Length: 237
Image 1: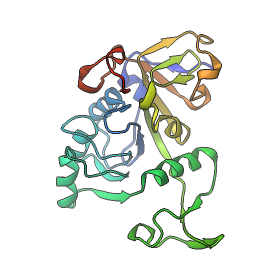
Image 2: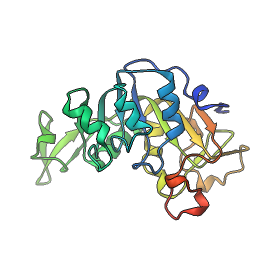
Image 3: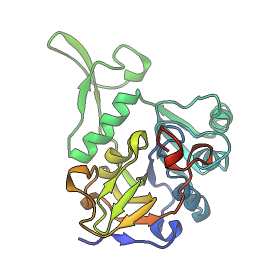
Image 4: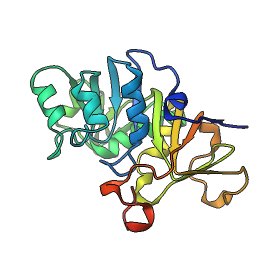
């Protein structure tokens, strides 16, 4: 198959309906698809449900989406980091809903959706407010709580390299939530630093097969932490 190769982030994004559920990759800024989020900001869709590991950093990208009142609900693990002031203000004012999910549960709920599973039992969260209203069981003597899959209408992912078939490789820790989110959405859009011809990526290094990818946009010098290029930092961005 041939993936859609878009010339701009806006064209890769396509149409996004109000009320859509959008998965956004990244572990804080590392691996966050900043240019795609900026395209979503320009698009204007609102009343969004966002699935992300955290609730934005500083004044940019996801944080600005929250600040502008475009996110109705967020499903995340770390909503209150030191620079998540826009989420904090919106939550305290009752302008945004929060579903708090332990990080491992968040990743596994997304993975379960991509794998076509109906959910799973885990001890994480049992006996806490996070288990309220959920089914519980004792399995092999261990009390557990049932967690349901997390699916999305759209996944925004950042990878390092794609080929013409949409196969993806990531850069170090920037990989984080990208691979599981790519499998769990109706449409997956990926920003990359470069696109190479189909077959130019060693199949043994492919992390996300192109069958999960709908559109790719190459963004040269894609946004990184502190403006550093990949060759300038040990940690991935």
